[in-house]
Length: 90
Image (cartoon, rainbow, N blue to C red; front, side):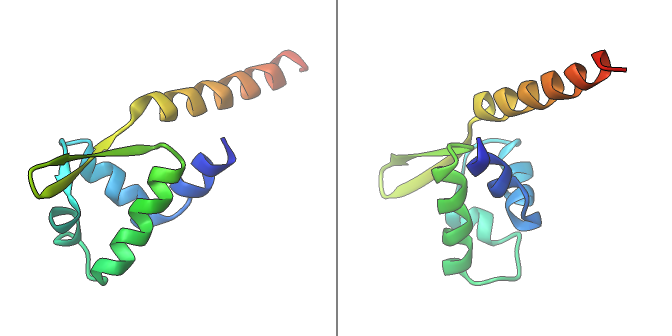
């Protein structure tokens, strides 16, 4: 879960996640929304993949990236449980 928090701590990666909410995209499609190099985009995508926040799949010659909402939901549930346990202590 630490990888998830690290992955979403960066504003560029959060913007990538926001873009992927609209559907699958290639790295090139994603890169068009940023003013940084394609290798930098690839680096951010790899961090998100390692955290399993996104996944990739090949269609022909292109690799498409998809949002993995299950991992994000699990992290949110953990945070909510953590917060709720704190409320019980009051």
